Image (tube, rainbow, N blue to C red; front, side, top):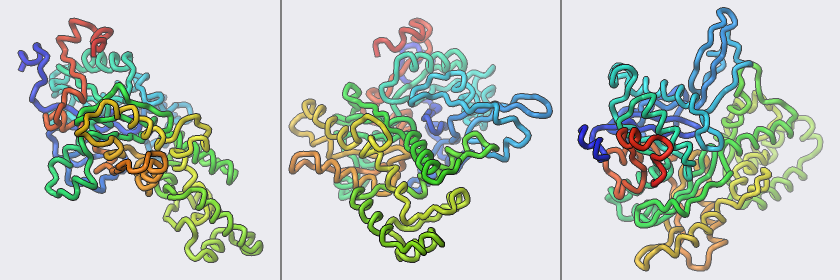
Length: 468
């Protein structure tokens, strides 16, 4: 094993897999079969029986000070308001390792990794039980963003080698691991009809609608083509902030509370996940809502706006939904005619709604497909015939159908199109990284960059990724 590390050969021993996303940090063993444990609720609707990470935590750090003892506490993850009782949380800013999907605050990242390694190695005696004196004996597979700057990769490698003593580090984009995992599932499927209609193909495009950015990576013959990758400024956190601003301006209420620094943003995220969906025809839906509102009698709208509208519309235009957190803060909100439910996801198709000077995701997919077509052989199909949606924003109801129609209106007649929903938009990246660590992915050398400790000590952090 030591000879393999000295020669730079990827070891076959089990590895620690970390999906270091800007929203959640998920970590576990590459051969684990335990379900995901989290400080917050994690949705795993499709693949509850699949292997999952051992720890799943929000990538946030807060260090409040006790009002009585003046002691500073370090809290990792999304801390509930009850845990901040007796602490001066108003003066403790919530810090994230990320800025626009790129890790820049490595002191905060080290705090998160301390928590993650302690939880992952809990069964082996904690971090000290891994290799003694806080060292890690296993190689680490770490995900990164698409088009990650070299400085960020160098600092991440320096942190893992110098602080934790890892024998080897694998760095690769998270969305490519997700595509590789879905490709692996489609190849292992025994249903030929599923492979033809629902599964991804070796040549295609992965659209990652993440928390801090939207990324597009084309695949040619089962390998990612990073030279044609794109990263857009459309993000889940931007959409959530846009929703929070719209609600506060429309209803003249501040959604944040004094007992928690992120209460307003967390409430907006809850509203976005429970209420919002993608309209098949946005402008037609707006016109129908406007027509219905003009038909409402003035007496009914002034006496009981919410209940009266719901009864007169016989269920409403947008449909009712259950979100008691919203009614507690905004009791006058009517779910049936709240245009915010379709206005917020529409930002991905009309970025100008949120003041973003950017092409839509459909336009980006068509442009990327045209750029990659020249690299394809005659035997391979169109990239738009296998478009995989991953990331939190891909879970909006109606996203895949609307994206399919938008691309059809922009492509030439007869272009084969197929938009595939990921098996699990949240955990496919981690499972793909675990499959890479186990050697299950084909052309695995194209998914990540491997650096061992000997190469790092010889070249140093400033030259280790120059040639990669």
